[in-house]
Every structure is written in structure tokens, then in C-alpha cells.
Image (cartoon, rainbow, N blue to C red; front, side, top):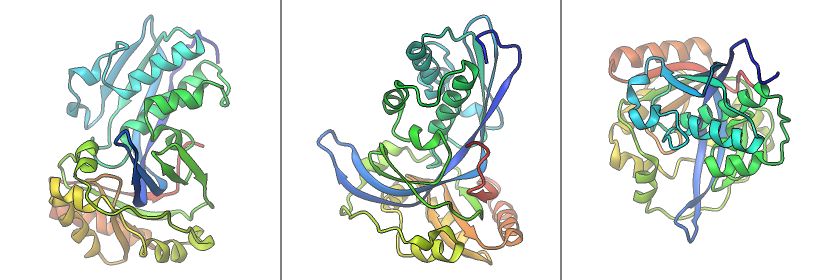
Length: 302
């Protein structure tokens, strides 16, 4: 595509789920190193690009009101990661951002779903198509690393094993499409506070078995793992325990875990109908919670 666009381009930004998460160490700069298996869900935000005389940024959607003025600022000094990525990629690629970027926000903020990173990855993906940039551009890895540790894994939306501070990505076998229910108990759980509260031991990296590509193998493996950040997150948002209990009580829920640094929890199901009924029941019982049913490993962008 050329710089003189006349059409709009919409990119899906799926929720990221940490199927397990182990804390493996802490660096001298204070960052923790992790070992995590990540997959994506067909529930998420949208980023829409359209022509404009100068760069504009807008947020709409059911959760747009969660953003303050600093997050809606379109200047290079914006606090919004999407805006930061637009300006950073424009500088690196020597392009003029004559576009309007509209973020349609459906994922809750500070929820352990990587929403901000996925949105940023979506705008990078879209701009590379918009400006006809090669996917293997030499400046892309460094740009993504500067913008955020989760952006590299969010760009292709493929399952991956993530190590280090999120900068080491290992490919994993294609995982089976699996019904999933996402439950957020309605309170933010800031990542920095969770890691500051972490007082657990450091673990070795897990050995991924070959049979995780199928449901039974994946569930069997995940039952031996966990999310090391759960106690630290529950100290901030105790309702995470209620979300896990609600999922575990549902018929057909094979596994319930917290994703990322919380507060979103997820349940994996073998049967789609049972997953749908579970989502409906939890939403009825907890009208203030954010509850969505969908599919794990059914991404919209590769």
C-alpha cells in the first residue's frame, strides 16, 4: 500500500493468556525473569487506520471511558502505547503518520490479558501493511523491545513459550482450538504492584511435553504448573479467588487459572456448549464482572 491511502484498515488485537507463569529470577535492574506458555483468544480489541491530514488518535468501544487524558493524547509524549508505537515506527521507517488510529476497546485495563501490548502490536502490524514495510525490517526487533516486553509475542498472535523478561520467544507446537471462558472480577490489578509484592521462590523453566498440542496433554501438563504471581495479585484484588471459584464450580471446566498478573482468570473446557453455559451462568451470578466466552488458539491474524 502507498502513503496516500483512501481505504480503512482494521486489525484485530486478541487477548493474550498466560497458560502458566513461573518466576525464574530477578535482574539487577529489578525486572523479574519469567517462563510462560502464551496463547491467544478470539476476544479482543480493534485498531482501525484511516487517512487523515495529520496523526489523530481516538478511543471508542464499551471500555473507552477507562482512559484518561494522558492516554488519549496523540502527541509523541502520549502515555498510550499505541500512540508511542505509531510515532516510533514513523521515525524508524521515515514515514509521515498522516493517519487516524481508532482503538475500539473491549478488553479491561490492567487485567493480565496483555491488552495494551496487543493493541500496540496491532497498530505496528497495520502500519507495516499501510506503508508497505517488510515484516523483517531491521529496526523492528529493537523498536518492539523498547516499547514493551510483550509486544514481540503479540505481533504474530501465535502460541509461544516466553522466557527472560519476555524477550526470548520459543516456538511451540500448534495447540488445539479450545473453548475458554474469561472472567475479570471488575477491579484493576497493576502489574508493577504485583511484581513488587512477589515474595515467592524462583523456579526452573518447565519441560514442555510433546503432547501439549492436544487437549488432554495440555490440561495434564498445566495441572502440574501454576501462576506464581497469584498470591501477590490476590493481596491486591482478593476477588480473584472468587473468580477462580466460580470457574471451578462450572460443569466441564477442566482447568481454572489466573492469567498474567491478574485479575482476569480463565477456564478451559472440552465442550463449547458447556463453556457457553458457564459464561452465561457466571455473568448472571456476577453482573459487575466482565465475562466472555471464546476460543483459545483461534486467532484472527497470522
